[in-house]
Image 1 (cartoon, rainbow, N blue to C red):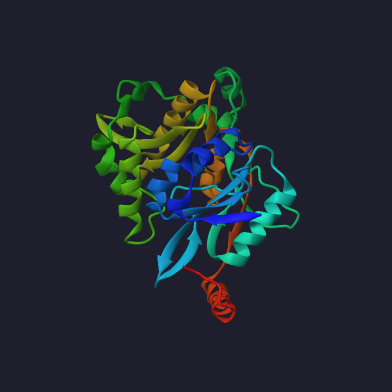
Image 2 (cartoon, one colour):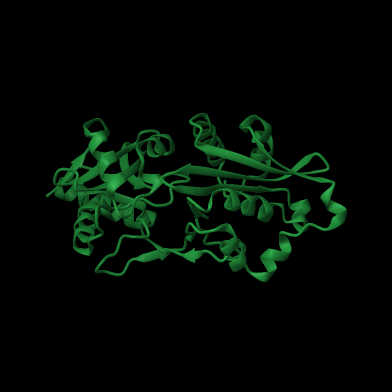
Length: 304
């Protein structure tokens, strides 16, 4: 019922057609997004003749294939014309029985019979901008008003990656390991080269103090990065940049905040009054992975 196809075995025409007609459609599951974020280290589970698909990215450690969502790839999961709980369960069973899973994140439309852990994401759905703005919190609306003394010192511009690269490298957050920053930069560069990623900068006295990176595809504009000089927090440049992107795109596109489990960032996002859209997560500790690896050895299952 479920076929496991390695990268070179995937019929990408049928895969893309399945994504395009799916109820759960997400830009993160597109071929070019996964090719870049995972460096083409992904395969797919297929139901029948591509009636439903489930992309499965992985990393290799010590020659072992371990499922893990790549950086900046928040949601994957099952994609089908209609979301079916029973079918989602079949995919989940297959995933857990045949893979070592470090981290796999489903999409916000996937539902299951069993309870699985969820993470938070926030979306604003297409609407007239005035309606969207009217829903902002009073605090967010105040943050969007610059005082008169600042007006002639401020400029907001669309910038190239070359204009912004040094600022990003200095102010990126979430890069906790030495290898994280180069990987984030590699992905940003490749998305920019494909004309999918846009950078906007907030200048104060001709110096960049805030920037945002937004990715556009599948009728969605996703916030893939905010970069802030902490010395200028009171100017609220990040709020102004995000509001400007929303103003320019919200009539035709979903705005995806890409969620956060950090309380201060969640509070910041909630000021725009988005809709909470949780998504399911399967995650295992190193200890559990070792136990599963031992089970695979005993049963003769492949983990390559």
